[in-house]
Length: 255
Length: 253
Image (tube, rainbow over the protein chains, first blue to last red):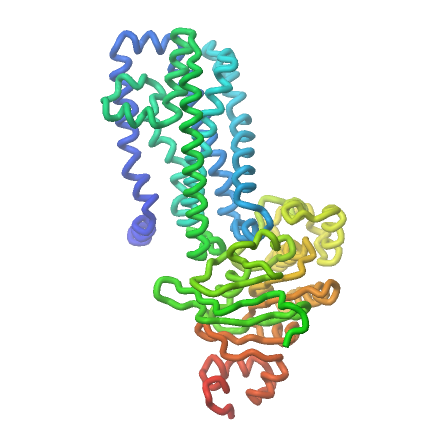
């Protein structure tokens, strides 16, 4: 049985990657958090609700992506991809339907949680008002871009790449400053952080909660990066769809 | 000579997977309203040919045109006029039969979808389980539902890959009758890949025999029987599979 599972493991690079990157992600996230809370300003920020705010906004990013990917995986699990690809449905329409379902799933999951945050911790995410709309748009766009690329990988490499749908977003977590400001990261990592749209959202959230300032400039920058990111993801998806077509994996979807 | 432009045109189709030539220079044209059987053993290239015709597989070289559209570049202009059934795909098991048919009716832009589903349910005897989850149906019932999905848009071109595989003889016969009905009713063009010789003999007016990715014979069933001096297509198939066919230059005994 060990041999049977070893064969599966070594035949799928996404499965191997998942095993390797999890410990690194955990170490980085909680390490930076420890550095932050060791400082008085970090403790003050937590008191202002930046931690729970980060948790809730992170969930928009994570659940939004998961909703997109899971909806696509449902078709893979059902062996229905061939039926869809043979129907007049265009790839852009498929992507639009995944995006709509991601928002539907997100709202079903997030609305009750935000109400619970009010009831248990007195933290009202909705009080962010229009800023929340800007945060939401940027986070959901990033989640769609990442999940679109992951869906392309699943289409090409089969369900062996499925685990990426659940875990890939966590790669961003230590880098995009969810729970601590970009400033506490090493300089070289800060450059990577500012290349990611969610960083602008989480920094914007801290500005809003700590100084009551809405940083529209950060949201515009995030939006522009998101447009580029989504365009790249769409190209990756299209390229992987073509590869799947060449390899014959549109009909034979599986492990 | 074909009187009208062929509905399916395959020209010098080649598909290479790594170093294996799954289809090797296959060419044929299929006229409107005909039923053509693609016959061949495992690995002969039937599914690869059908998948290339559907545009789900990009050929290494060669062209495929269906209803005049290049299936590599313009498939979306004709997909609403085509449909297929294949053992390699399923319908979502958690959706009821009615929900699955409703979804595909919408995808194919079927007008009066409700009436179409009701009519298909009656014709294909689905009414007893229309509101049951598709995943809970027997193999025979699932095949009928898959056929209903394949007929939902009244396709002018119907591509069938082993439509009766794993069915009992009674259900298989019943399915063949429905396929035949569809062809007669709207003059559909059907391409059928099968291992089942009696199925091909019954439904098809032309048979293309594939072996190792190449066409080794192409004729109406009576002509094949005559040429190989056999009583049925199964014997012809065995001749081809064992290299005793006329294509190899040997006489059949």
